[in-house]
Amino acid sequence: MKNIKFLIGLFLMTFIAVSCDNKNNDDSNNPSDPITDGYTVSFDLNYENGGVYKTIEVEKNKTVTKPENPTRSGFEFYKWYTDKTGENEFDFSTPIVADITLYAQWAEKFEAVDLGLSSGLKWATYNVGAKSPEDYGNYYAWGETETKSSYFLENYSFYSNGNYSKYNNEDKLENLLPEDDVAMLRTKEKWFIPSNEQINELIGGCDLSWKLKNDKYGIKFTSKVNGNSIFIPASGYRYENTRDKVDSWVCIWSSTLNDESSAYRLFASQYEDEITCYTINMGRSSAMPIRPVCY
Image (cartoon, rainbow, N blue to C red; front, side, top):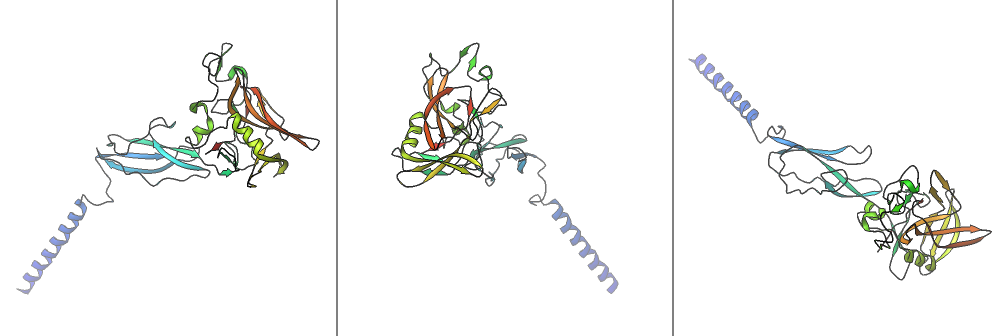
């Protein structure tokens, strides 16, 4: 009799253990189980060697949860887009119906310096594409938003068949539009290229001194009002296949057209201990750095 009870008890214990094990294996709420009827949303950092930030599995026709914003040195995260160029912002209320890759867009980050100018305009500490005040940064032809290996009139974006196709005598445009302002594009409209008038305000509102900063010559602009300062390196400029006047001329573009073929720029240099600084026109297809400003 005792043997029968023992066998019954052993049978019941085995049955219960197997049942519990099966229940655990069939539990559809187990968070570690892969979603078999769903899709993968990949979040691409969208810069060289950035790679994929995160992948999330989403049930079919469900929405994906926006991940924590990624970080990147020298940039602020902006938004997620369905394309690399940032044309189509992704709506996180959209149901996921297929595998999809979302691409991060970034805003270049600058530090603003208040020089006490009457307009309230603030100047960045370094040029677009630079990593420090003495770094020259990127060189751009006037109104172009990408760098190039050479800067000829023939490969200038707004010139073809012997004519200027934009900012010409017909369209009467005198200042860069937002889509042609590389500072606005790289900072998502937080910063912009200064106008000729704004550069002249900088010149008039500051004391100027020729300085050597980490082996780079340039002009230090020191506010006459509050003593704050910025340094703009003597980057020179580029034309055709040449870079000229490096360590001799301080050059940055303004956003203001002079005439159909030229635009205003800052020019500053030192000769026999005397500093010369003013704005002057230069051919649009030449390239020089951009120093962004903001309010």
